Image 1 (spheres, rainbow, N blue to C red):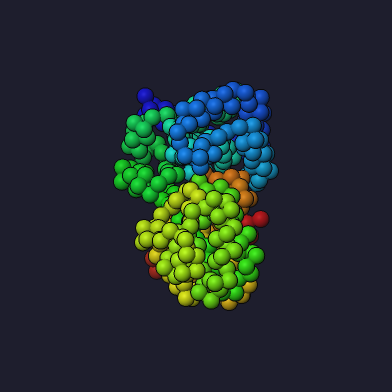
Image 2: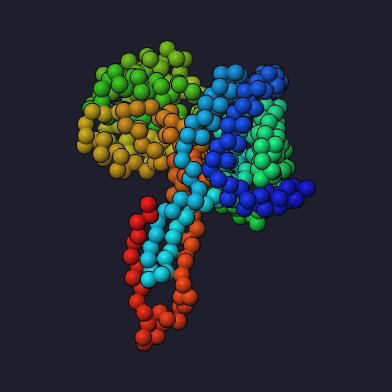
Length: 428
């Protein structure tokens, strides 16, 4: 049954790739209207999920909540996405191989993408919308805690697309069981890319169980480093937002590094501001000497993505030590520096191995919507195809189109071989 559906999606992906940008935008606007007109149905489904998950932690429940305000948010996101340029069928480069023989590099959709995401109903809408805009078919699997909400949202999107234009039929599929996840991982001939969003163990499981390429991040162990040349007020503001604006997400700061030369001056007000937000503080031995009542940090803390109101703090003797710590324990997601010194800024930007560097601002900015990408399907810490928040451009690949006029390779071989010109042409 699942194979038949995936086969249909693979066929549909070829047609979807050819749909004009204006038509895709109009389809997205129809989805926005349908979400708006079905608020009551969506909220009722979400209330069932919240009731079933009443014993879950508060950060997870906050992520699960999909009220009218969240609906407004995803609708605004769709309107923002519509305003973005169509990423498909753009000429990326053009090369004159010889007179009348031109090689063009053209942007095209990836094809069929499988996205397995956490218990955030808003993610379903964002992912589906991005895939429509980029001309990709998508298989969706959300967290079981959001089962009722996801089902209603997926039904609304699928029904809206199919009613709008038959070419959108079989372009979105929601799977609901873990068994179905294991099943789709077998079908590399239909699915071109898997994007898992979850724990390190989960991502590794997906990588081991499938030969389908995997794009994603295992953890969000993000850092903020307070340099010796930092402004204290900036540090307080940025660290508090990085940690507490929304703790249950992958771009929330988990570890704070502080230069020893500013530790006495910075730590007390920063910790006080964090504690006002009910954050549990864990610190190294040197931190404990300044803030006596912190919980001792262990080696495990440097490796932990808390996704909760907990932060670990370490004092370092140099920016080099801070960068080494981040490159040792970080997950390559998002890491920041707070400094007024240009040399420190340049050093950190150059040597930190991460997909997003933030300077004097919150790690929470590392997000597809905030980066102007029209939301995101996830964050990639890979070093191929796409890195960082994966928005429209990350869902696009390319193909080469060579146009000639009775050109043959034999003319470019042998003792009298013609020479290639390999001249770059203007792509405008």
